[in-house]
Image (cartoon, rainbow, N blue to C red; front, top):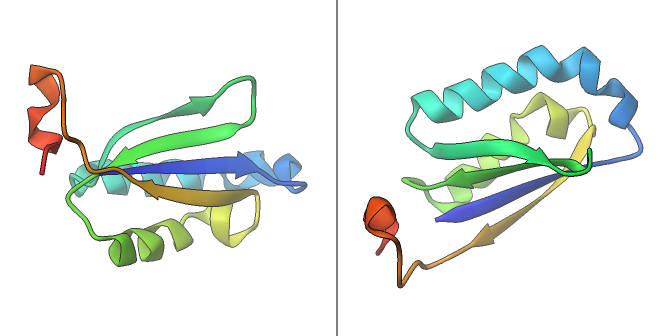
Length: 95
């Protein structure tokens, strides 16, 4: 399982221009059953995504295809988590 942090850069003002492509990219990740949650970092700092069913290499490739990343609207960080304990509703995330 992975947490992707997308933090606004100095090019934050370009977000509106690339929002449609970014939202299509998020939808693709959801449709591919890789992204399981996406939302905003408050207050207005960027976004976060939970991902699974992928490898770190595949995820880096996917993230680099986000228009927000390619146009440097955000910088990103990917953190890998090995879930050991979960709520029953999230047991599918355990290794």
